[in-house]
Amino acid sequence: MLFLNAGQIETTVGPGGEPLAAHAASMNIVNYIWPCEVAMAASQMSWDKPIEIIAIGSIADCCPSSFGPVYHAGKIALHYFWTGTGPIVWFGSKKTIKMRLYRPGAIQSDLAWAPANRLKPDGSGMRMRKKRVDGAPDGDAVAERIYQWSLKKNAWVGTYDEPLSFKALKVLFSLAPNLFYRIQLLGWKKESRFHSEK
Image 1 (tube, rainbow, N blue to C red):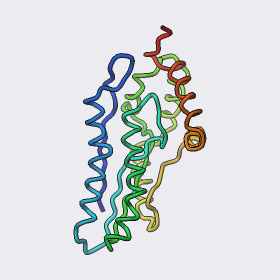
Image 2: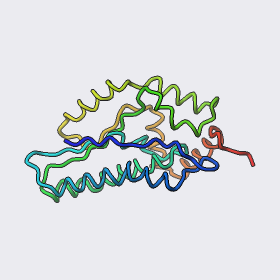
Image 3: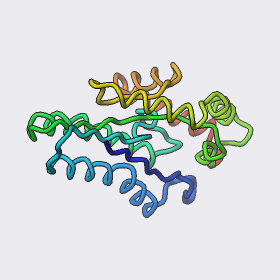
Image 4: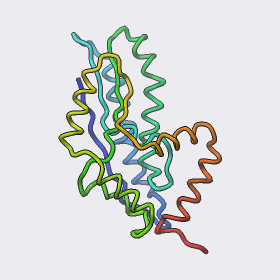
């Protein structure tokens, strides 16, 4: 069993809060390309026992966000890649190999606040973020959840508990992407500390 636990917090932004190109490339390598390469290399090897690859923190919030575009893009890419490639490897390689994508969610720590550099310090977005972080489990609870989840035999893709609002946004993104985009525009205008009325 392989546990892939690598990530890079998006803290470097350019003018207007735009993600820097070099930073975007490095995050995609860590969050998307590297787990894919590990999984595909594993599928080509000989194993005496079934192998499972668990990528921790790989789903993010499952939908785009104007406040974390690079992070979300890499995680979503990995999710779509493996749900498409997984069945091919599963049936084509004649090997018992699975890749589980797992989103542990926010863990109670100072690091949970790192991506908040795009939010207004006194806005409702920051208050929502604080409520989410304060209500998140600690590291031991997340580790136990991941362990118990890894024992399930027929689970390929999983996620941690997430707010109903997250689930609603995922449904909205799937059914009405243009409306979802408009909501992102409104969210950036209202809550981004980089927004200008000019």
